[in-house]
Structures are given as structure tokens and as C-alpha cells.
Length: 152
Image (cartoon, rainbow, N blue to C red; front, top):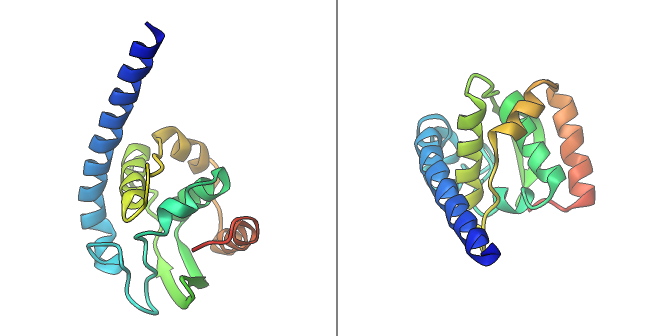
């Protein structure tokens, strides 16, 4: 009985994350692809690639929190990604619902990520929305995260 219930729960969660990723694709295409390109490859020296990177960053709880902070609060200033320097600006997307933010970040996490990509929940965004952050704080958080778990 337990094995059957666990299997059904796994199938249901898998279907939920697939549906969430499909919703995330639509949001990504309308809000993110203009800068990060349709496939998430980014634009050299302007907008960092997301494909193959976001899923790796989200492998840790600190990485997931950092990514939720970036989507909610935006990011600007110098950063390095995949050995390329960027000086860009990403606007905050706090006008999106927690469900929409979770869907788009789940989708982006699935881009070129081997294995099972991380799934984000609306609750993760709801918890972080109550604690707005400034850009300099997010850059500091990125530096601390990079020291703990080197970023791709």
C-alpha cells in the first residue's frame, strides 16, 4: 500500500512540475526571452546565460533563496557568470504572482539541467516577498553563495 501511494504521489508531483514548467515557458517567453534569448543562452557581455546554470545554482537551499531574491528584487551591477563579466540590469518581477514566479523559475531551472531539475513553489516566493532586498545586498548574497557553492 505504501509503495503504491508513494508512486502515485511521485507521478502527481511530476505532472505538476511539467504543467508548472509549461506555464513558466509562456511567462519566460513574454518577460525574459527578450534579454536572455529564447533558449536561455543570454547575450555576451550584456545578459548572462541561464541555460545550464540556474538549475545548478538551485541545487542548494542558499541558491534557491538567492534566485528568488533576484526575481523579486531585480539585480544590477557587475557580476561574473561562466567566466564572462557582465554589467547589466535586471528589473524586479514582483508584479508577478508567487505562482507565476515559481513557474518561470522552475522552467528556467529545467533548461539544459541534467537529471531532475529543481522545482520552485509559490510558498518560497511568498516567504521572500515579505523581506525586500536592495541590489547591493543581493550582490553580496551572490558573493557569499559563490564562496560556499561556486557558481557556474
